[in-house]
Length: 392
Image: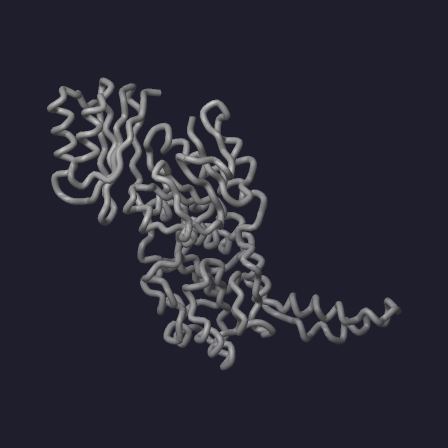
């Protein structure tokens, strides 16, 4: 029986994925085999040695001490793309809000509460509607920074709205490229993209290479009056640079899911309370993805969508499965294979993958390894954590 300790209010559709005969889920379970959460912060929380995996029902993992867990051999999963459609639809709304003063127009109508005569109201509306005129987005150029799960959906959506679309992503994966329409123009630098875009939409993770990347220099290269959309991460923009660009008019508007006190009250800053993934469907999709990844790891040792260990997948071959995490140093795998050979353990199949300073391994063997075999693997130089998984 696997025990999954849960945090936050997780969508029931995800928790229902765990078969009741093999899993227990709940906030008080201890010792737990795995943790499943949304935004709960784990940085100051001591978790027991029994925990071998953490699943985040969402994309960002800044609430999880990933480096610490990696060193302990704890696999951290996230749910990339599960909330992509929700964010894409909000970006569609932001594009329209950025092209026409819809927000100002709605607020203006609410000031007419003292008018009781319908004809008088309509006459006044006809006189003043010119103050809220804008432009259509069809024919304008959208620059998409980051063409992953969300960025590629935004790019394809904008094409369907009649926009021209260009994108920049130095780390574009083959999988993402397959999702992307051939009509999206690939641009080789952020500076070049900034110079041709009427709207610039950000879809990047907050990593050291992207922190503050939208700065004075990039904004100075933008087309005058460009509308900047940030539904990715707060940390990738320099707020001081945004304010300067809004003040001098080089930035037409800033539409963001990440408010700052300095931006409140500005007509040219449309701010939302981090609601990009706040739909029932997105929360369910994230919870389902997190649950399925946890189950595949706990039952089969497979790693998919981990932020700290490489994707490592192998079909079950009917034998016993040994998995182990190790420091990515020479001779570790050879040592483990020698242990198996010394104990006459026949290897059916195996896979080894590395990511940075760590590696993950799956080895299927014909017969049940005894405690001496597992102890020898566990104490081999460089091995951090081992598991033995019975046949399905």
